[in-house]
Length: 418
Image (cartoon, rainbow, N blue to C red):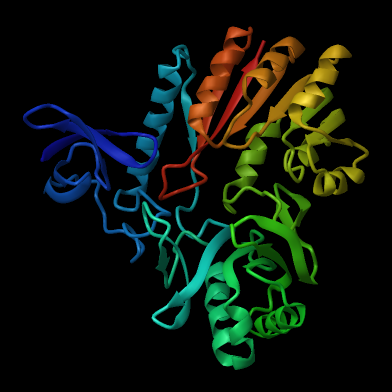
């Protein structure tokens, strides 16, 4: 079936009308303006090629489920992702929007964290990602969007196992490995997901790996049961976290804690959220390790960071005399509404699920002077923004940060006021 591609949609595919019946089809790895042949919902042939098409930078592109856009120039990726964001916001009814501001940096080697599957392929242990549209493991040799230290470590893990036969039986228990490095790749943390925990073998493994990867500062085990359910953490080696410098501040990031994945654009993200803002009281909701709280502490008399687990956040705020609250955002806001608290600024960086109806309703009642919403999902962002605009807020700025080059994912920063 022949299809003329009209646009990209959120999720990574192009869409267009089929010749003949005019049916609208989604086609992966296509570019707007191209005429393509489609078979079984896959790109079979490019009849008319876009001048914006380029050779992918990774030999696994197309088979791997990680990237969707390596076939397009980076300028094209950014332009079309911005169009997707604007369309999704406008479709929700947010039509009176300010100009969309776009922020980019290096499109390769940007990821500070990767999670790889580990398994036997043709009798040999390999690392890989999921195949596109499948749970089958795709063995990989490289990942050009990952910081080089991460793939160097993944290869070193296999080398250690191959060179230490005594670890072979233990190594068969490895299901996945997660690797996290700081922005300059000077320190590395590792999590091994194992079917069972044997502490001495894990310690020996880490000691061997440290010889090949001197940046390794700590590692831990998480036991994965037969059902795939994550159990209590197992053995530990080295430190439980690493120091991460961002926006001229130093953060302690515990092993497994969330931190923004793009090591090149974190500084710009913090600047957009915090620079030039000051006042008596700021709330940092969904605060994580305190990425924004730390900078806000320089310009607000009082900063309250809210997170369900406050270990890293409390450590970051301790030296500044600011406050960390262990609670869900909804719990915190319910109490704040009752006490009639009114902050000068609210920063929100929720997970992909967004804020949700209750939090949006409570924020409408708080009536903060200014709010900054950081979102990694434009669908839930559009939903939440519509609710907040309906409650009296106006959208003053919209920024798209391409924290995830080569993929359909994007980060958005929206500034709202009253």
